[in-house]
Length: 292
Image 1 (cartoon, rainbow, N blue to C red):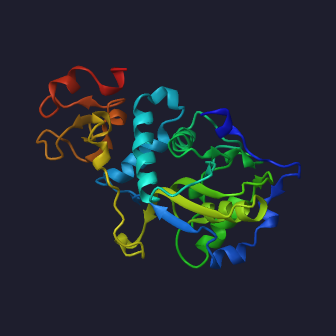
Image 2: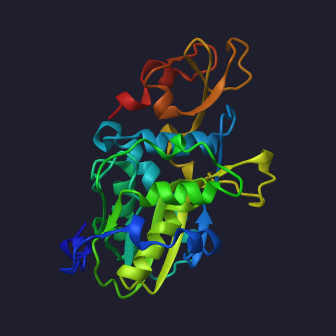
């Protein structure tokens, strides 16, 4: 990333605590994001959803240097989809939502790598450092309510409780990136703060995946990740691991022991042994993550 991309127009005003500044009731009723997209679905507890496993693998690749070159390939795949889904719109800034374990943007996290890659592709600048938290906190899954009338309210308050924005002047459009969306509370809080305290004229939010409920009857319609772009990355392909920690290329391999679940090849091969019956010789002889 160039110096120009790293520059953020942070003013001299003191940081604003969003727990005091945001109108939670209004945010429950109105989404301040001009566009809100999800690239795919995240199915809780699914053993067969490859797109769910792919985004979990993305989140698990920290620090990124321990997962190269695979995490860079995965970020490139997601970045390409983000640009395609936003129709090549011009963005002046890219900002990502901070993860629960961060108080400041951590450059070793895959979300940072993806943000940098999007800046490189679009020519936008990274302004994530406008946001910080007073402390790291447990992940949002500790908030029990995922659905229902009170879920969004509870999650908005959880997001805003320790989140601050350093006021500045962005003067343009923002591409806001998050990994997995449940209720959309995070992107609502960030978008509201960007418009109110940073002068953003437009905020387009893109999530890598959206958590699905009610067996898909949750109002999101058909939402499936386009994995065609993975064809050029063999280590990002789909494999299956069984109850004996053996990796299979075929889900129906007769030697597979239940339970069997899909996985991303480079992640599976960090802990599972290749199946001598269905794994090709190159994979059995040398694991993808050992080839670099």
